[in-house]
Image (cartoon, rainbow, N blue to C red; front, top):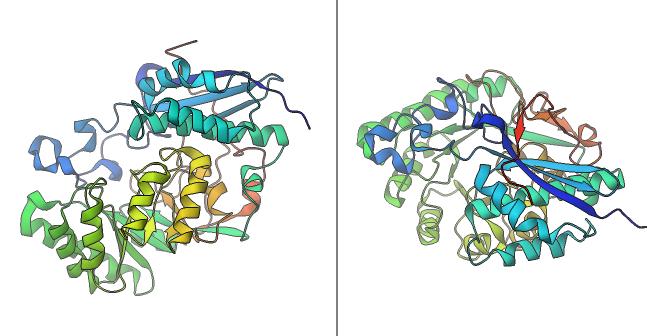
Length: 398
């Protein structure tokens, strides 16, 4: 069967640079739990300790990629990357798509990655590649009138189950989630007093949620091996299920040591800020972690996530993607080694379920009692629409 070819690729940012959520979900107003004294590697500087926005976590903004076919069908996706990523998409990557069959996604991905290898390989370049790849999968699904998960092999279970990331695991339990992942509030620079407060918070939450509810700590690259080891052992008696992204994501040797150091039964997880099969190959072959957590909007898109997942499966590791809404749901529902999913609590007080990519996406499915039926994904492509009320700006054209 013949399909229309790709007519045009377009890249946008939010007009005026205002964020306020969506793919750039760290860009929130004052008092939001997601940016309130969370431990980071910049915590060694007092002026950057209270807020991640103070050192620029929100400077890039959202990237919106549209891919239009000859028949007028448009696939789109959102991720982060802002104007720099727009430049790459318009001025570099578009040449590998326009005039092509959209189902040549392997060739397109390969040419984008190796065509930019001399200045890319990770970071913002792979964010841009991810945005293009996700938009391509959305277009393919719309052209075939199939949801993306059908094209990935179909569902292996009838529903997704979620753990919640946010400041209130106790409320997440009441909402039906299987676990709650807390941000770590105090880093090594805050010494023994900060460590004590971290342990006290887990102890308090354990007393609230009971024995069977999962509790985890997201350390957001803030720690060293010694501090992470102490934290893991002190929290072990309170049933900490895993310690996440504890150290510098480039320190594979440190993760290898940390996995040996943690108490028996505690999991080490990482990979949110890792990209491509080659980065995850290091984590897996060196025995750095039990669960890898690629973000499909940052690691290379669906095309690359399939390779990463196969590599993890061969190493007996689970793949639990970093929260990325429908872009990961369509993947998780098709993989046995992705048994549950992450849901980021975007309500400022983490006290109710709100769409993760609001206001950019319309018709975004959200969990009910910590679950999401596969039928909620039964729409062409990723099944969401771009909100026409979100003003877009196209900084570059080709």
